[in-house]
Amino acid sequence: MKRERIYVENRRKEILSKIISTPGIRVEELATLFDVSAITIRRDLQYLEDQKMLTRYYGGASPTGQAQQIGVQDEVQLYRSLIAKYAASLVEDDDTLFINTSRNALDIVPYINRSNVTVITNNGRAFDCEHSVGVNIFLTGGEVRYPKEALVGEFAERNLMKVYARKAFIGCSGISVECGMTTENANEVNLNELMLNRATKAAYILADHTKIGHNSSFRTCRIERVTHLITDEKAPKEILDGFREKGIWVHQVSKQDIFDGPVKGTL
Image: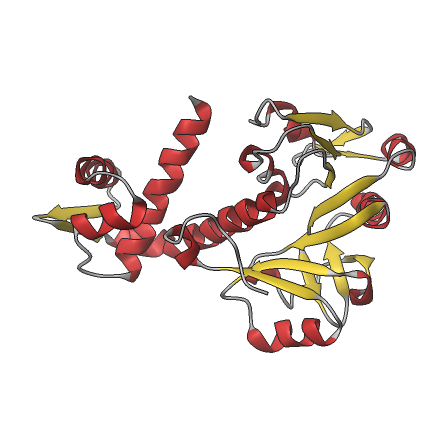
């Protein structure tokens, strides 16, 4: 039930985003794009109108001023959801994964539909994270730091030093050619670095466009240590070209992925 509720909530956000970006789009077009019935779309539009996000008219709807104001924030959340879905598509059966304290990194877990997947994380929120029966979650332990519920300190570090993972999915506060991958939390630097260094197959940095070219206070690694970056279509091209010159595989998701089936991204 929780998984279904999340799906419906995400669909409604995506519908609102589409209405904002495509004025005059019709109910029938939305039904085709989202692969649901026109009745379902009308119910979603009624819900959004009740939330004062749009005004319905015959055959369609238009966004309210309130919806326009929060549109940018919702757009970032949409891209983060697409990044999480794309990252989940990179997971294979029998994988062991490192996931750090990033909310976007943890968002990967509900989308994993593989068997015998082990997630090792210092994100305390993973305790209540929705996941399939094929996913097993292990917490590193350590000192709990709020409000992120991050598990940090020597205890967490010692436990991480005893294990390896095939892949790591690491969120960050910022990433740039000049400063590399950075975070706002000094006590998470060593743990992020351990996850990167102990991923035997691939390490993926997750960063939506608001974090590209941004530098935070503490560096986890130099840019030369990064091999894969998952971001979105709004990331500045000139900065991404700089990453590519450093040999980084840049994976980009787009809003079109919503309508093209499984998220694939572009290199």
